[in-house]
Image (cartoon, helix red, strand yellow):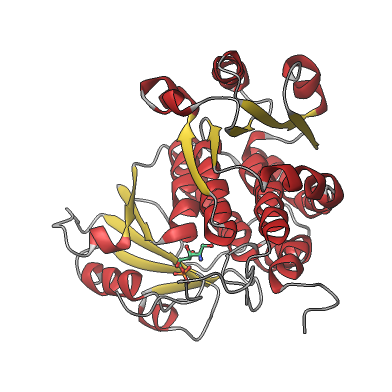
Length: 363
Ligand code: M6R
């Protein structure tokens, strides 16, 4: 069942290029240059989105917020389901509420969906399990088509959630007159190259395994990034703590000097997620502040980024060069591999980490 892999998690990490390609095939036109989403997915007249989820699915929503704002100019709030359901969230009939869940059964997310049901124009479930409660109860369900995910640590579901959310943001951009068909086709062309790029990222496995042997000795690990790489920093930290039990936190790079930099000394590895995007220089300057305090930097960037900023880092991982839209999806792979190999080096139960369940059906 594990297809020759030692753990389901590694099998599922390695499957990402294939399931991502499956979802692209499903949601794009035959010639791959246009979107093929259900007719109900029409953002005309929608004034605001509320994205609600737990854990890694919530982090996918946090990435998507950058996309909905940037590509579609659509106001977008992201909520933790357990908070949303017990607050008095302000909902109105011009808003859509989107619930993202691998299992489609997470108790808090399901309750949040029920809570929003008659208060918004549309409820949309983005789920992996097509027969799940959320898929049945939402006004509209979009499957992410990742296939069965067994490992407690969510991997391929995360990247396919990101893909479907990116496609929704592109559709919103079109419906709201922000993107023309040519601009969408250009974004889709880059998305079509993603399975190949992901293959390359999965191929960093050996290099990451070596690095993870050192990372496994750390007591605390920090992750940082800017823009959509900030939620990725949260995801890298969540994955690492969940399966290796090493204390890890993710920060927006610009927040470091507002407190967390006090933690830095020669014992603290800091993973810097820095594709060469518009914010690269800013992230690098935060990274240098860490290095000035003897923090051990693991820099993830492309070759040119490493050449420009890699002097003095503890370790550098060369990623393929990618358009900004693809970076959070692609950089998820090395973050997952880092957590996986660190956990394997520590000898923890990777697929079934202590105290955790695959599907949290009680609140
Ligand atoms: O099934 P769901 O996507 O609703 O699950 C949400 C979280 O419980 C889940 O993502 C959890 O955070 C993962 N174990 C993280 O790897």
